[in-house]
Image 1 (tube, rainbow, N blue to C red):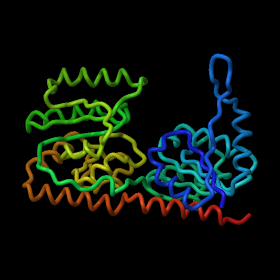
Image 2 (cartoon, rainbow, N blue to C red; image 1 turned 120 degrees about the horizontal axis):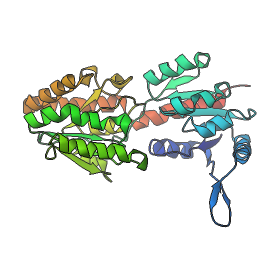
Image 3 (spheres, helix red, strand yellow; image 1 turned 180 degrees about the horizontal axis):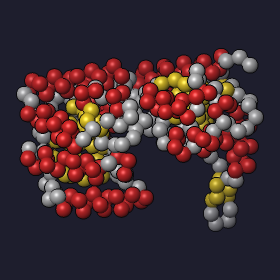
Image 4 (cartoon, helix red, strand yellow; image 1 turned 90 degrees about the vertical axis):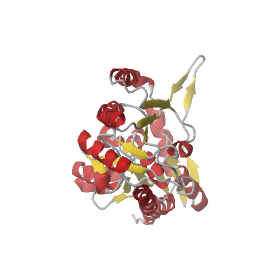
Length: 330
């Protein structure tokens, strides 16, 4: 079976799936093209993108769009020439979903049940074509690590308003000071969020928590970074299904999450919080627990990750959807 892949965004969630595609199918990747002008490379005009995608789809039995974004929006409007499978992560729901002709898409993968419900609320006619296959991690890379409790909290993310790092510092400042904890914030911000980073640095000074909040920037080896963290916090207001907490839990970090839609698919219900006081209560509970209780909670985190976030299971499920698309008649 000839499988085409279209992915012009991050491959960070896709590498293991693509490797399996290559082992099972005759797999090719649609290549981005630019116009070579004397002084600058320009994007290919829309009509050329459409023509290139049309030829690519005609050459394959199934085409897999890793992101339900701009290229799927174009491809879905073209005459039907192959089966189309896509994976909708999160942001596409708000930037591209309305531009896509979903009737021309054969199978739609959502990364959480919450996102599936949101999608079907917008596009009820697509019921029967959706599949919930959550994000996942390589559990062999992120192995359980024994550690002594050090009072280290952490969050790892692309730092922008949606991740609510500013609010996380505000909400945890009292417990950081009262229990002498440290909050490690890892991850970089784009030029679009320079003002957000400036506000965070200013807030740290105004709250007088320079000794308690450490901005670490980009980390090259997150598996090493997680080993220094006791409690991982996901403080976002919206996620598809965030990968960093999965990695942290796999390594034995106790993980808590703000109750964004679908958070109960990421962590156990009792590990979610809504308000700052609820978050402080969870942090104090772990801080004041016995060593045996903290060890038990860490092993529960690892077990939860193994049950729910194994990349091997995800790869098999995605391939099953591709096979289903290929077997469709008509």
